[in-house]
Length: 193
Image (cartoon, rainbow, N blue to C red):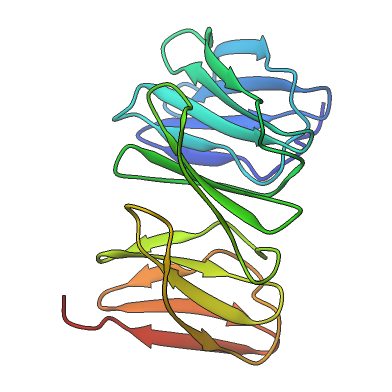
């Protein structure tokens, strides 16, 4: 069976979400599955391995955030209320999950139980999962705008316009945030906190 989203590896393990909605955790040292469970997801983006939380996290297109136990694949929670159809996957930083929907809402959820911490409408639909960088969250939008938001309440701090639509989540490279958009790579320098 083929993966439905890009597999992710971290801490000696790899997670793959298959086209039939199953999640498979593989031990990279042995190549053997540690568990194989029916997660019942149509993935919106790649899953996230969060060993510090003890979870595998995934977003499902129909509007669910699913947390599975890293130990045995047992469901820890499935958050569906008020999310709406999800887009672009999710990001995890400092015990918060950041996820966006097809209507341009960016939500922060508590990673331990999936409850909403804040919910903010963005000027456009996000193009990729946001990225925590220094003391801000950066959200790449389909309009080419990169919005900087406060992680504690989701309120906009500023933004920058790039040429083209961002093709993936921003990447941290030292003191810079790198982002591919259109035919270019953009670097945002971190401001002093």
